[in-house]
Length: 140
Image (cartoon, rainbow, N blue to C red; front, side, top):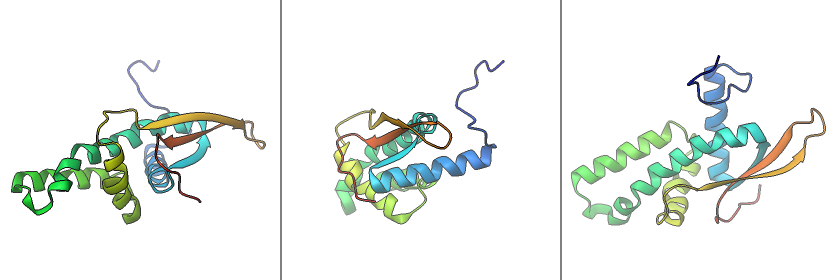
């Protein structure tokens, strides 16, 4: 029985699953929209929303710049380090704490949207887009 066990295993061991979701979050933050299987997209929401929340929570501190107190600077460093556990590239980190944090600064949650698209030809897997709500999609 799987009582109180959250998250899909997706046929992978834990380290492979962690790497998969880190790469998917990085791609999502870089491009704004990615296509993946529906199960992966639904599970990816949890990781992407957590990373975005770290950036949104410290957005006012980023705006302060050098006027921030040492405690506020420490909070900013902590948020960047926590986000770095999931986000793999510098480009995605800059976009996360820049464009994305600015765009979602007013909201609390609901940063991503999953849209069902098609059935994949090879294995009939249901596919879906996962995208950042209201943010411009970068061309691939």
